[in-house]
Amino acid sequence: MKYALVTGGSRGIGRAICTRLAEMGYYVLINYNSSPAEAENTLKLVKEKGSDGELLQFDVSSQEEVERSISYWQMKNEGKVIQVLVNNAGIRKDALVMWMKNEEWHDVLRTNLDGFFYTTRFLIKDMLISKFGRIINVVSLSGLKGLPGQANYSAAKAGVIGSTKALAQEVAKKNVTVNAVAPGFIKSDMTKDLDEAQLKSMIPMNRFGKPEEVASVVAFLASEEASYITGAVINVNGGLYT
Image (tube, rainbow, N blue to C red; front, side, top):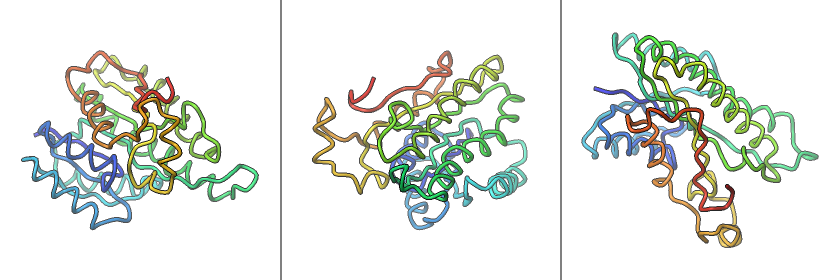
């Protein structure tokens, strides 16, 4: 059995990634923080794909919660290694910098950037020992281009992009790849408050993307076929930014 952990897997892009990995035969560990019913729905979809999985509740921004939850799973599953880590958990708290509150800045960085660090650092050792691993970070158009009202989110995602490129070089010799997928405007809970009718006119494909379109790229990067790709950032944005 192959094991994959998807943070923020209860809905949207995370849910699509969980179900796509299930199709590839992975036992999927579905992380969630505050939506148990949605997480259960994701687990149901994973099982419908003919695979299996379980839920892991922890807040990625808390080092203690990350390490306690994953350690407990490892204790119950001695000898089993999480081979694929998808760092997908993220939050937005948009505001212009002049109006942005300290907590809006720090909360977004803690979840999006610190969360990547805590989870990745805890799992990377086992990947190096077993000489196989796939780390895929879901970043954003905002981290590449920068978007007004998202200085906090742009900073966090740009930080993950930089860390992706650095970590890829640290672990490449051990057959561990580290890549990022940068979605543009994707139909999900993260974008439900945006004016789709107005924004899609900026996109060459004239539409928002689907979570499944992001999940397909993640699945490829998790596969053996992507074994010579590392340190890459793949845009999934309908041509909005290249």
